[in-house]
Picture 1 (cartoon, one colour):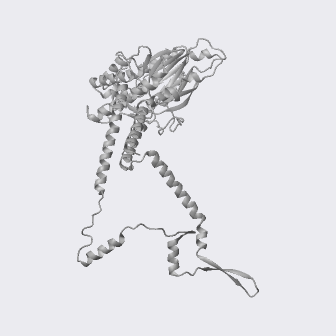
Picture 2: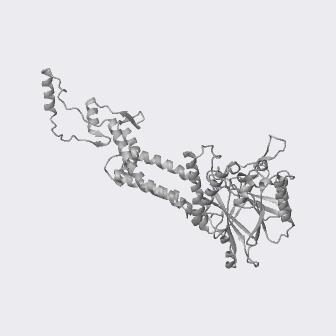
Picture 3: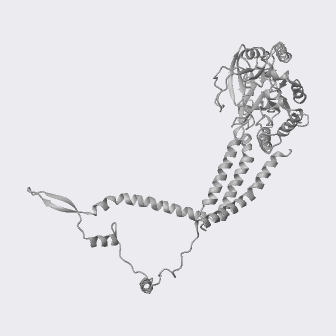
Length: 534
C-alpha cells in the first residue's frame, strides 16, 4: 500500500471510530436496544397502549468533586475527570434518555459525591453542574416535564452527620424539596421516604419525622397502587441472588455506627434493617419498590402481609462509579380510567436499559492508537498498491499449499528413486525381488545432482558472457605487479540501519500529523457539540 492510501485508510478508521464512540453509541438505546414496556404488551384494545404515563428513572450520578479522588482543588487532573464524567452523563441523558420523550423524570438520590462535606460555594457549584448535565432550569425543573427527587446518603449523609452539620438538610431542601412526600403519577401513588433516617434513634427529631410520615400514609385508604421510593434498598438476606442483570459481586448487609461517642449513630449502611423493611412493607403495602445506592442492578422479591413485592435496585448512570454498565429504567405507569378483560392487570411495567460502555470505548481508542503506530512504523515502503500486495500474498500462500501437497505426493517416489530391484530365484524355483541401493560413481552422482531435481532432468543453458575471464586475468596481473587487486574496486553502497530507522520515524511522524490534523478537530467538535447549552 502506498503511503497516501495507508494514511487515508487510517484517517477513515479513526473518523468512524470517533463518530461511533462520541455520538452514534448514545443513539443505540432509543433506536435498537430499548423501548417503553407498555409498547410490548399485546392487547385487544390497541388504544389502551397509549394510556400510560412514561417515567424515566435515574439514580446515583454522584458528581465528582474534591472528595472523590483526593486530587487538589482546581488541578488539571481533577478538572479533566469532572469534565469527562459530566460530559458522559450529559450525553447519556440528552442522546439516550430524552429521545424516549418521558413525561416524568424521577431521580433516586446521590446527586453529589461529597455533598455533606462541601462548602456552600462548592455545593452551589456542584448544583449548577447538576442542572447543566440534566438540562434543568434555574429552579431545578423542566418546562415540559415533571421532575421528582429523593435524598441520598451522598447528599445529606446519615444520622451522625445531621446533628453535627444541621445546615446540610436545609440547603438540600432549598434546592430539591422536602425529603418525605407523596405524589401521584397517572393512577399510581409514589411514596418517597428519607431512607437515611429510618434506622436512626426513634427519639431524635429527624428519625421520628420520617416514621410519622409513614404512619400518616398508612392511615390513608389504599385506593390506588403504590410505589415505594427509597435510596437505600430494603433488607435482603446475605448472598441473595440479584438476577442476571448484575455484573459485580453481591454486597451483604453492613451497618457502621459511630465509635467516637456513646450515641451509636449510624455513619453508613448498605441496606435498611430487617425490622424497618418489614414495617415499611406491611404499612405502605407497595406494588413496586425502586431504590439505588448499590451502583449495580439487583432485582429481588420481598414477602409481606399483602403478598409478594418486587424491588428494582437501579445501577448508577455514571461510568465513574464502579459500574462498567451504566443504566436507567423506563417505567410505564397506568393512567386508564376504565378496566376490562382486554386490558392487562399490571399497573406498572418496567424495562431496564443500558447506556454505552464508556470505559470500553476509551480502551478501544488506546488499542487503535497502538495499531496505528505499528502500521505506520512497519508497513512496507514499496509503491505497490494495497490490493496488489494482497494479491501477491494470496499467490504466495497458494504456492505454499501446493508445494506441501506436492511434497507429500512425491515422497515415496523420491525414496524409491535411490534403489533398484533384482530378481532372485530360490532352490524351489520361486522368484523374489531384492531391493538394493543404486551403485553410482561420484561423477554420475554429481551430474545427477546438477542435471536432475526429482524426476525432472535439467539441461544446461547458454550463459551470457559476463567478462569473468578478463576480470580474473586482470586480478592475476595486478597481483603479480604487487598491487592490491581490491584497492580500486568501488565500495558497495547502501543505507545503514540507522538511516532507515530515522526515515521510518520521520515518515511515521509525518503521516501521524496528517491523521491528527483530520481527526482532532472532529473530536473537539463532537466534544463541545454536546457540552454547550441545548
